[in-house]
Length: 73
Image 1 (cartoon, rainbow, N blue to C red):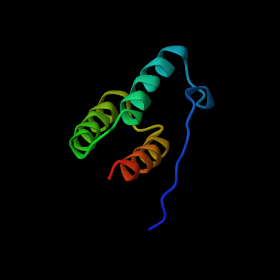
Image 2 (cartoon, rainbow, N blue to C red; image 1 turned 90 degrees about the horizontal axis):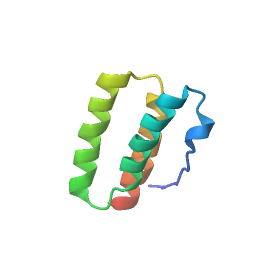
Image 3 (cartoon, one colour; image 1 turned 30 degrees about the horizontal axis):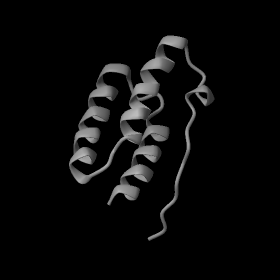
Image 4 (cartoon, rainbow, N blue to C red; image 1 turned 90 degrees about the vertical axis):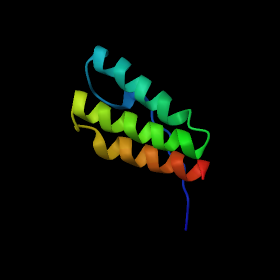
């Protein structure tokens, strides 16, 4: 299985300033994963984030989450 790394900047996402700050926090949470337990906790956090803010950028978030979780495993 090939693994890849992806780098995302919040500035690449066109949104309002408030949403950018919220999105930065989500990306920092994903980036900070260090072990399997944190992968599960981050998955729950992402699911709650979707319920709160919607799924507008779901594809981008999922790609970043999967690439980071593959690095941890």
